[in-house]
Amino acid sequence: MQVLIVGSGYSGTLVANRVAKKVKDAEITVINPRPDFVERVRLHQQIAGTYSAATPLAEVLREGIRARVGAVDKIGDGAVVLTNGERIDFDYAFLAVGSTVVPMPGTVPVGTWEGAQQARAALAALPAGGQVTVIGGGPTGIETAAEIAEARPDVRVRLVGSSVGGGLSDGAYRRVRSGLERLTVEIVDDEVAEIGSGAGQFDGVVRLRSGSDLASDLTLWAIVSGVPDLAARSGLAVDARGRAVVDEFLRSTSDERIFAVGDCAAVPGARFACYTALPQAIHAADNFARLRKGRKPKPHSLPYFSRGLSLGRKDAVAQFTHADDTVRRIYVAGRTAVALKKMVTHSAFSTARTGISSF
Image (cartoon, rainbow, N blue to C red):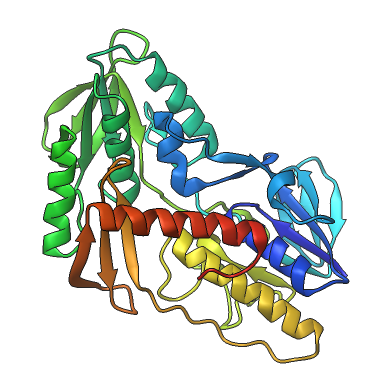
């Protein structure tokens, strides 16, 4: 039984380890563009130099799982085709390529490993008094701005977004913004029109929709904008965002031999998040195990519980939500939220590495 997993982020790594644990006759191969498992939710720490977000796949995959470094050009008809033309057959496959970032020209993307490495080097080279601009008022932008401000108090940090902290309850919204202000992060509620060039290695100009120009030595793009086009390129059914359309069992509606999990799967009501990807990976792996035993797969459902935002290493906000992910008025902040955020992050890594559910 040949099983291929395309992608080895949180969901792909978890699927590989859980299938290896539950289906003993599965010969599992993981195909990933790099030899490391990257903790994407910690890339803001990678940039700031407060954490190393990459771990060799050999250290996180169970014994017997083959790791193949490569890029997949197409998937379908019982095989994947790599960009070098090589064909690898499968009986079942799991598509777990996550989401992607398309940065505005003149910016460095936060949400990719390569972008984080580039940003880390640029930040380290930035002298005291330099200006860092983070574009994106969502969780990625907030966590990146806060992490850099705490790690590099000698530089100025600005966060630009159409609504920084939007989508939270009123209380959590105010608490996030006050936490950023305590770290001396300048908040600019506006949209970016373009990035202009300035003089010097990092110097640039951030032009806002309102007409203002802001000087910036290092400009980071912290907006997730879509998913890789592998599913669409392969002829699988996709939604308007390019995510693979799946049935209630997380199988592609175009090919029942292919499961899709994480950000690249069009699961109704799901948002881009590690919190979403891990339960999907667990459920898809368990459904595959059920099928191998001649049992019926079970429909997937995920009640949401909360959203967490780190504000550096010493502060955080946890926003509680209803099951449909709409926000409640309740939130916690400070040390309690820091502890909750750490617990969830460590649990995510442990779950992916062991294949044993902590969710």
